[in-house]
Length: 285
Image (cartoon, rainbow, N blue to C red; front, side, top):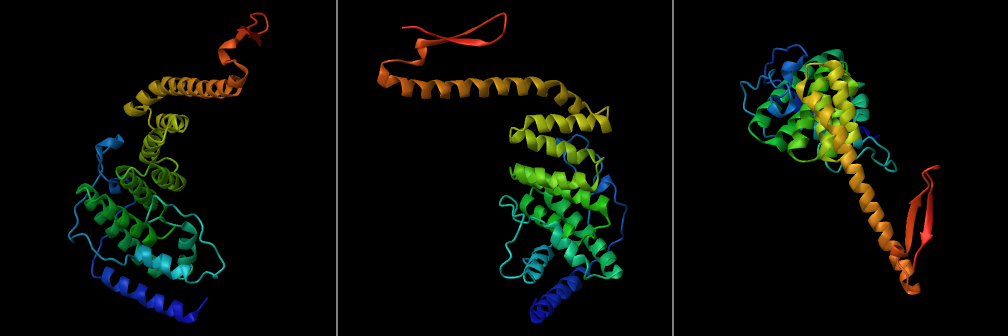
């Protein structure tokens, strides 16, 4: 670890802190009102997009400085882990743990207020349809928010997932929702967004499990009840289609092998023994 690099990075962090301190923020409780308002996610009734300051357009965000600072302290032969090509602002929680060791309690509380501000800016950008910028703000909020504020971090991760879904980056949305659920295992919106993302990448069984979990937490959730009713048939239909496609490919392969012998798969028929349920192969010319 080079002392000069750390000192230089510390100066960058102090510069960002000074800019953030220009905003005065009155902390609020870590409840679901901090979540973005989106009618696609079942219970959009608990949002507040109003902030006094316009969204920031800083290029060097605190999230980026965090990665630059901590990555400069890695040995040159270490390979960065947990890359996510779909998510340009992917958050590595292990790096956040290392950073927090460098902070005082006063620093942590100051950053908690700054995280609330960044989150609200993200909410405003999301409402304006600026999903990439909103994603950047949510990532900044997570990099600022102290680890002990688990509920606040769960909400921000779920909001990031909503951005990623709008950007059709469903794999990354699943990852973000999963982190949100790890932080708050009773957070219905995180399950709902993960279930929808699973559906988009054809992981219907996983989606069904999430909808079932939602019904455990909220028995009156109509959307989850509908999905639990319809998904089993969709899974069955998909599996049958996959089975037919697989058999078709096997048949094509068999015909290719048998063709030099003047034969085809039509020369072979499967007959099931009703007494045992096993199949016999019969050859026909």
